[in-house]
Image (cartoon, rainbow, N blue to C red; front, side, top):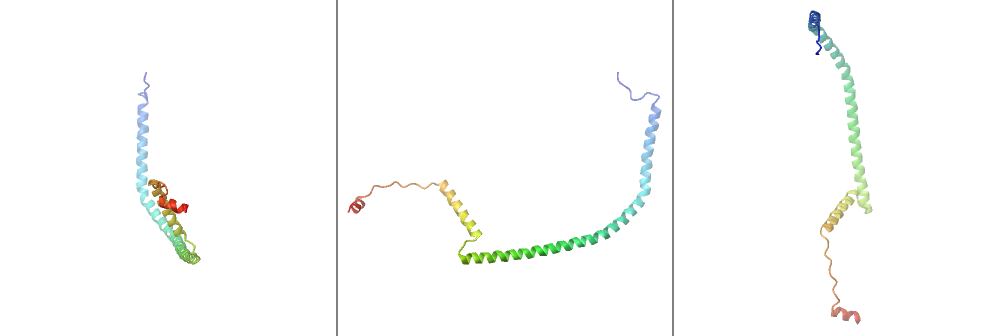
Length: 138
């Protein structure tokens, strides 16, 4: 037996409730429409206040970023000078630089690969010739 949602005597009460909900929605829409101008003006006013206070903060952050950039640039210049100086000292001492060692390591790796791919043909040892034999016995 299917249950019915409402008895016929309750239908007018449901209609009234639905109608009241509809009217409440229309009332909310009307209030929002009336108040929207006031809300908009309030939002603009608060936006101006926030913008003014945040400009000072933004300028302070920009200043900090500029200082950090300048410090970073100075550190890069110092590091480059240090690297150049150390490279010249190493070359005077006859020591290879990291770049040179890395280059040699790569060359050795390539040679190793080549040797693995194409093994060297072994030469058969020849018996000593008569000339060699006579020279060694003499």
